[in-house]
Amino acid sequence: MALVKHTNNSLSNITALPSAVPTGKMTLLSTATASSSASLSFDSTYINSDYLVYKFEFINMHPATDVVDFQFNLSTDNGSNYNVTKTTTFFRPYQLEGAEQTGALEYQTGEDLAQSTAYQSIADRQDNDNDSALSGTFTLFNPSSTVFVKHFMSVIDRVFGSSAIQANDFMAGYGNTTSAVNAINFKFSSGNIDAGQIKLYGLGS
Image: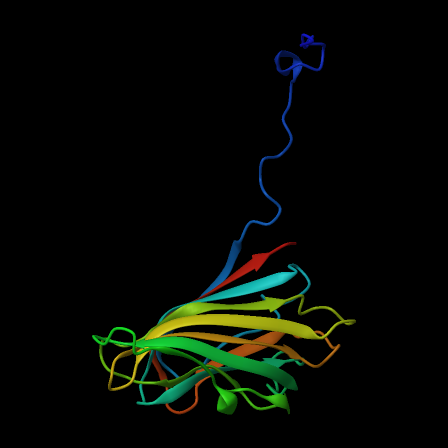
């Protein structure tokens, strides 16, 4: 085996190291806290060309009204209108509390959209029991592009219903527009957001 000979490029001669900060780190841009709020929105102050990916984290979102959907819609005019045309899909695995092997994997045909400007559900039939809430993430990809449609996806973990169903909701789709998306609105399908927090992060500048 040949010996390795150190030269002036060895570690002892290095005077400076390249930046160790990863380019893909998450940067917290905003935190919105609900308190009997009709909805929570983020506009072009945060959603612009600064980042390629925007990630939202939902923490214990609790509705004021029983059995409602948690929804979102997108805007291309900084929140004057939330009406971007969307095509989506929605499915989930679930398990009943205290009843092993009674769960299933189901495709929610009533929760997807096909070229619709309506609000898209990312969790459906959420109850407002005191100990029930939903948490999870929503990711929006390259919203400032004026070439491509706007892809998005969400993963929600929650307990809902009279049978205390543990569900893991998956939604994905695209906003069918090549205009820049610069605002997003989250709300329940009826009533206020009683409590909860949404954190917005930027990735990939």
